[in-house]
Image 1 (cartoon, rainbow, N blue to C red):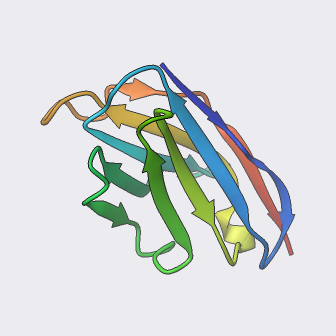
Image 2 (cartoon, rainbow, N blue to C red):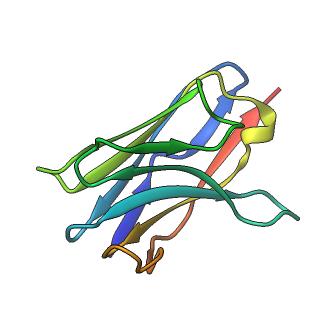
Length: 114
């Protein structure tokens, strides 16, 4: 089970930190987003060990994904936010190697005003 939180309204250039609390261990945890009228897209992901991180080109250099395994929580720090970052953000987890993202949390709304 995944619980996403931390969304809100922020001005362009501002920052927000999203949290994804999990009830158990995951192989990889990722963040996705879906803007109105658009398909869901990948944002960032992190391995259990935190050794591997992955970012979409659109957020590289602005967003930072991290995790605290003691708290079973993955974070997405979003800096230099742009209006085009406005979307519902979802966290998802791969339970095992090759399982794909088989657990999804509810979304949290992020709105960036210009």
